[in-house]
Image 1 (cartoon, rainbow, N blue to C red):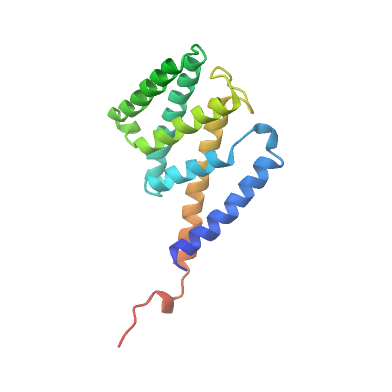
Image 2: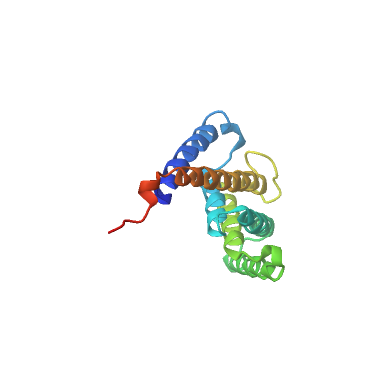
Amino acid sequence: MKLPVALALVIGVIGAVITYLYVGPLGGLGLLVPATFLGAASYFAAGGDRAALAKSVPTNVWGIVCGTVTLILLGLVASPILVGVIVGGMTAVFILGALVPALGFVPGSVLGFATTVMFGLLTSASGTDFSLPTGPFTVMLVSFLVGAGFGYVSSILAGKLVARAPAAESAPATA
């Protein structure tokens, strides 16, 4: 089986299960399907292997922390100019985190930051709320960590499907 087909099958099934759980039995936790998919996407963008977990998870968490600090600061101001300054300043902070080797995968930080700030702004949630289902930090942290696991399991299962390809399918044609 070709890798894109294997990934489509595995990610489609796992994505369906996660969505069912998030809107069904786990609905009270407030976990977000898009944040979980972004956690998985971050894992794949970081390389899609075990080392990718070490690259993507710390940067996702760093972005979530910076996004939470941003929301706390935004709760202290009303001026659109100050809102812009705070968001721009905290964007610089999370990018400067890349000076620390463990935080060098900046796309992971962008995803964590953007989703956390988006969640807080769209729901009017306080950055000081750390509860499920309303706290931006906690909702994003759990959603992204599930996403990292989702990506990791997907890559393993897809790899097994690709490895099961019949020899005739993967053998080069001879003349």
